[in-house]
Structure formats: C-alpha cells, structure tokens
Length: 222
Ligand code: CA
Image 1 (cartoon, rainbow, N blue to C red):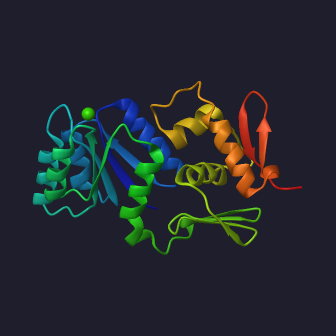
Image 2 (cartoon, rainbow, N blue to C red):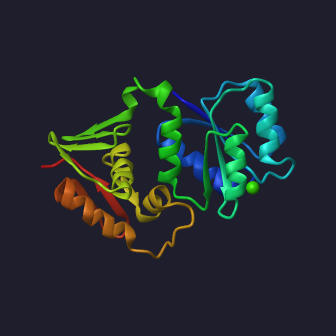
C-alpha cells in the first residue's frame, strides 16, 4: 500500500486530503509544520509527499531543498496559492514534481497523486474496482458496464469511484460533495442530485438508490 506524507499547516485542508486519500486506499501521515515534516520525511520511506508552500516555520521551497540535498528522491506535489504561478514554476525547477493551486477539487489532486504513484502501483490490483457488472480501471480511466465501455466526464468518474469504493453504503450528499467536489463546496447545492442523474443514465438507473432525506447508495440490480 502506498503511503503519502502531507505537510500542511491548515488543519482543515490537511484533514480533507488525508480523508480523501484514505478512502482511495492510501495510507497517510501528516505534519503541521516544516520541522515535523522534515523529521518524518527523513526517517521514513514515503511514496509521495504533498507539501504546502506556506508553512509557519519555514518556506516549503526551503524544506524541499533541504530534503533533496540529503538525497530524498520521493516525488513531491506542492500546494500553492492561486496567485503563486511564479512560485510554482520555481518549485518545479527546484525539485517538485507537480503542483496544485488552492483551492482545488479533491479529484484533481487524486489524479495527480495517482500519476506520481503509477510507477510503483502499475501492477496493483487496487487500481481496478468491480461491482455487479461495473468495472472501473482507475489508471486507464475507463468504465465498463456489463463489458461495454461508457464515457464518463472526470466529475462523473470521481462520483462513480466514490460509490464503487463504498458499495451498499448510504453516502450523504455532504459526504459526496466533500469527496468529489472539494472542501469549498456549497452545502446547499443540488449538484450531487444532478450528477447522480447523469450517472444513472450512463450506468443504469436501478444501480443508484435514493435514500430519502439522506443521500444515495450503490446497490445490486434486482
Ligand atoms: Ca499554509
């Protein structure tokens, strides 16, 4: 199982990332500042590091530089403010492998995480999810319904993946929103209902059951 170190001082964002990665089958460790992050990164083997640039005790670039200087080759995805494009370019020149600008949607981050983990995880069976005639290949980004490929948008794919990882479980709109749309979602939005409708049209209406007043559940067809 791949292990991801999250170095991020904003508790809300750190918890959001950790929760999402865990439900995607990854193991996580978190550090709230650069000193703790360095300590963890230097004394453990991680498959990937997610590094916030704005840390309270040290600039993320400087931390990355120190880690690279002691020979750490772990891929690093940096988190940067939307207006930090200049910083980002600098980061990519200074040892980062990829970046995400904040705010971001979880599925975008997960796609980048998967891309960076791919060399190690290429043979892992966990990249394929199967349930009642549905097959999702997370690396190839394909979905088969009873053996026939269907096209899903990236948001539909992320929503389908959330259901496929939690078959038979009722998922609330809030859970789905935070997993698929991100931490800055509007809880009053009906976007989940709209996308469930899209998914029903593509995967089969009877697969996604409405649980009144709560949310939705992926069920076996009867
Ligand atoms: Ca920060």
